[in-house]
Image 1 (cartoon, rainbow, N blue to C red):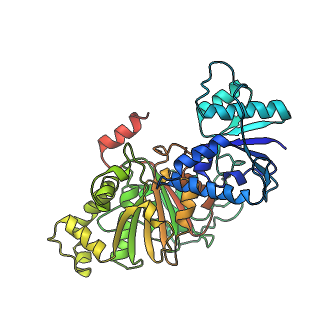
Image 2 (image 1 turned 30 degrees about the vertical axis):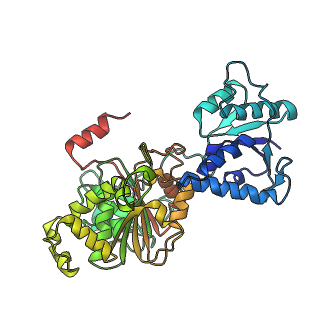
Image 3 (image 1 turned 135 degrees about the vertical axis):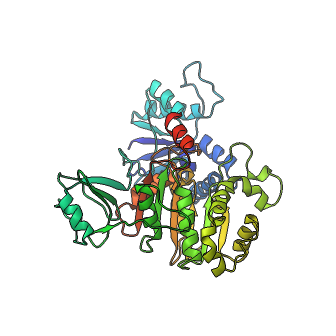
Length: 453
């Protein structure tokens, strides 16, 4: 049975990581337990993960002696390993650095038991040092055996003829869920339900979605509040946001592509205008760029304002538009009030909630339009926790830019938004859209393209 050593950052990213390696001897060095203890008091996702894995290991303690190994349900063995010395490390490596305990543990296990030893860590520096010392090391994703070569974009372009496009516009059915759709000129990879399609000929084009009925449906331009879609991808986004059959939507895109604004507009419209949902709930993870929320002065509302300001900016833009006067009258909102008073009024009436992500855990949320902004900073475990909060009649929208991840243990493939659409693609109640074209301003679009880091 091969040995797998788990680093602290793996358990903080996914508290169930120790269960993802069947038929292995799982090693958790004692130094990792000590590190978990240093995180457990934090009121963050990392603190929550630390508490969860500590409880899990404590429960295993009742089933056997941890230092000798406890058998898991997946036929693996979990052992808390005590390293007596660091003599196996070569000269020059700092004995104080905790990561070097993992290296020493790997060297000792390989030397004593002559078995394959793998260190699983998100720390690239540790993987480099392990490789130099002859210890196999790997990064971690939540499915471990899966490799994601290409991110799902939620749309594709299919070359066809003008005849087929004319048939589509004249409401003739185009069937997509067959081995080779006859409207495609060349072989195409299988289409999945709710994937967005651009049918293109030399002179004509049409926008469609692969409906669960098996036919392509036409995507028409829809205006919500004062927002008119400015490009093809925004039309796809509005279609997904307004379809009540689609209960989960993920929207990925760079800054300025309109993902948050479109989600807020669709949420407000469906709460205020057709009252499909009783409340708009907007949340985002608090990833501090310096001092965390506990050190900021004032009450909770004042503490969270710096993190929630982008949400308020978009809400102000939507509510200030004169074209929405009819909705204001319907909801008895006085347009003469200043915008902050209007937002406070919507909150007092129970129509709008803007809050940190922490406060929606543990709740069951029915008939609400929920927007989780900056979802690229969610771990897969957090994304699952949030989505499973959805009650009857609730729609959840995750928005984010997976090229701007602030979380130290996440990457392009393991962040919450990528994990969600990778798992949910093809489900009839799910749709994903990728926004590429920036619409904020010419300057913002130019900077986004040319100033890549």
